[in-house]
Image (spheres, rainbow, N blue to C red):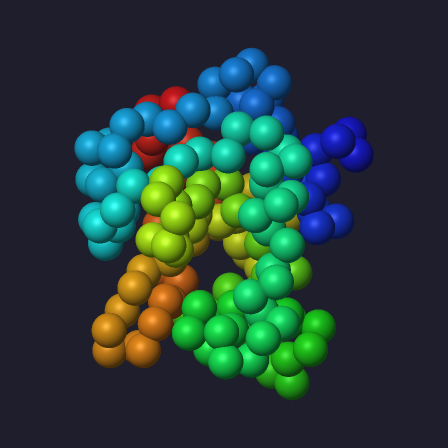
Length: 150
């Protein structure tokens, strides 16, 4: 099962099954916009584990100025527990990213709520917050899949 591990995190069994069956596919921009109305641009689903690993490296958290804009940090280096609107990059796996370079959008599994069925969060560009914040879109990955109709 190591082939389904990203950042030391085992992918949820439901996601593994969807990947193996070729069913982890983008449902269409209209469906996604209904579920995540604050997305103004399009994202692409990551359908291969190597792509998830690449997008989940968390490198933005390593540059303080950029980390503040993207609300990304490493929990192991934080004096206090990280909560939304911050993303703990050590406990997150990206499953979708912006289609157009520079749009800087993402959907991630947030393992802070559990390892078997983590919640799903998405980035939201909030002018008032001075950058990107992370918002919950589903309390679990299985709920997100039901919402997508996959």
